[in-house]
Image (cartoon, rainbow, N blue to C red; front, side, top):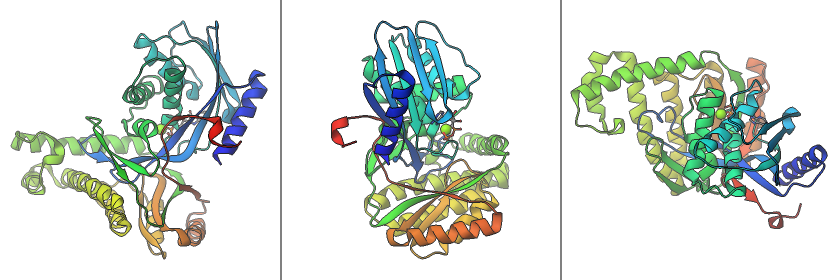
Length: 395
Ligand code: ADP
Ligand code: MG
């Protein structure tokens, strides 16, 4: 599949720019095994890069002041002058890239002329982070081709900054971090505040990671986030008033939370309870995964779904249905809604030999109940952004 994407991108480059690309880069999407909504609360997340990529075919154009992009999937192109400061434009996809250019320029780094054509196997807007792959992929390319001396951490932060300033999405750092730092067969336990991280082996022991895309996205996404943030902040404020010696939110105990329960009210209590439990689940899940205890890992995913559904209240009827039905199937160790909520994908741990049957049954049920064709993505944990070396594969 990767070879197909590379060939397709290369051919598009040839036909648009009438020359050969000099290098090929692959930037992956990501999944998050567990650790949802905890990134703003001193929590850990457990993402991994996957085998779905944006492929970039690139050629350096010496003595040129122009950088040209061709977005193959949109059949759309854009050029800009590399000696001028850029501002956001009306083509949304361009802003992810211009924001990267701007962030790099602000660091006092200089780039030269380029031609880039890119195409993707990461579904857009499904929660697999095509946006992080796009922005960090471009940052990686510039760093590589123009020897900018940026660290991997810089690349992730540049990607995030681009999204904040040029696209207007106040995203966390997990997506960019996973796309840049991913490693084959490994998950990353990441503290989104300090960016401290640790790799754990992903020993899936004959289980597959399968995503079911509900193809629904409910509109209260933004207001939902803001409400949750307010609920959580109310709880945090009281907790720190009462226990000022505690440094990080994750260090509050359940009994401390219990002590402020009456003051903060049930809603705020439920939200904070979910967060404290979820942060602990991430640590347990990393250990379970590295020990190949897929059964326990599955139980943790199920707990997370229940927490997101009843305590944090960010699920929706379609995802609850999907997860509930999936858990009735043979060979399923765990299932949960993945991402911010109110729609998107579920992530499922399914025994290899049962995958086809589960997919068939759940698609049929989902179609019957909601009249929606769900999409299915089987994913493997893969390396982060990298230059593709032609001699590695025969293409
Ligand atoms: P997600 O990151 O979950 O896929 P986002 O809404 O954050 O969803 O990012 C999707 C946006 O990223 C697209 O609307 C588009 O602007 C840009 N994008 C992603 N992939 C591509 C691509 N292959 N070609 C052009 N733009 C892309
Ligand atoms: Mg995104």
